Each structure stands twice: as structure tokens, then as C-alpha cells.
Length: 152
Image (cartoon, rainbow, N blue to C red; front, top):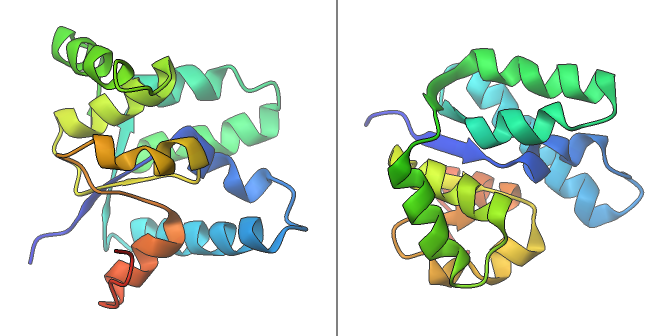
């Protein structure tokens, strides 16, 4: 079996830096860190994009910005902005997603990501509008990897 290609959005990359006093955030962080380990162990492939660069560069916290930007060097695919992505993003936006979210999703669709991983509740609530991409949170992704796909 070939290795999975995953796309983590900016919210997911930032999850370990969020307030960990909430159990749900702590659990998502733990799952996200497990995914990072799988990337570091070359078990799964990371996808990076221009919109990740854009959002991360806007982060006012220099330490967090540097930590997240290091993941760009571990990506197996880097998605650059092009007209196809912009057209796809516009169609996604028309279904109710925000600009940046639409660009993240369109970028992952452009390179046929196996999974789009996010902790963004707004994206997760509307994921059924996106037919050609599996959108999950980090906990669900780990559950799927373990062969216990009870996310439906």
C-alpha cells in the first residue's frame, strides 16, 4: 500500500499552541502530535501550500511561526497558487466556506490529498459539501489509521 498524503490546515498546525486546559483541545493536540510523529517517521506524506505560507507568515508570534514553518521542509508536495486552485476555491466559497478555508481545501484537492485534517469546527460542519476529499479532525484520522473507522 502506498503512503497516504495528508494536508493539515493552519488551525491544525496551531492546535498545540492553543489553551490546553480544555479536554477536547488537549485530545486534538495529542492526536495532531501523533500525526507529526508519523510524518517525521516517514509513514505518511505531508502536503504544504501557498495559503499555509500566507497564514503562517501573518502569525505575530515569532516562535510559533518558526515552529510551524519548519514543517514546510518536511512536505512531500508543495502546492503553488494557480488558476485551477482559484477556480476550485471560488466554487467551494460559493457553498459557504470562507476565502482561506476554500483555498486550503482547493489546494488539497489539486494534489489529490487522501485526507484534509482540521480542527476548524466550521469546516468540519460543512465537510459534506466537499465530495472529492475526506475531511476529518486529527482524532478521527488516528482512528481511521488504526482501522477503527467509526467516524460515519
